[in-house]
Image (cartoon, rainbow, N blue to C red; front, side, top):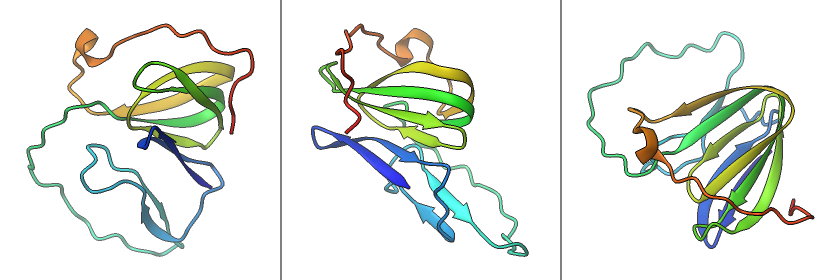
Length: 142
């Protein structure tokens, strides 16, 4: 399954559950995104031609990050650009999420191991703005 998280008309995240398995290559992001997300599923024996990536200077304005859940459970809370809580999702082993825009926070629900991939170089404190937001008593999983 693939789910797009859209807040106020803006694509904020793409979630690929562990069960997603379409044959071939499926891109989920537009070409202009600074982080690209695709799924590749091929039968044994498929050859992928050797290749190298060319020097292609790019300008990145916002950090986008992909999280790969290796084991455990993670709750992801999504926030609007005005820092208001909007909704939550729970990710488990094998799930992947690309965080594109808006705000996000996490709670580890089960012992967790995940891999994060994002653009570099890391800008330190200039890379993010931390904020506080009181979560509602009943979270929105719609």
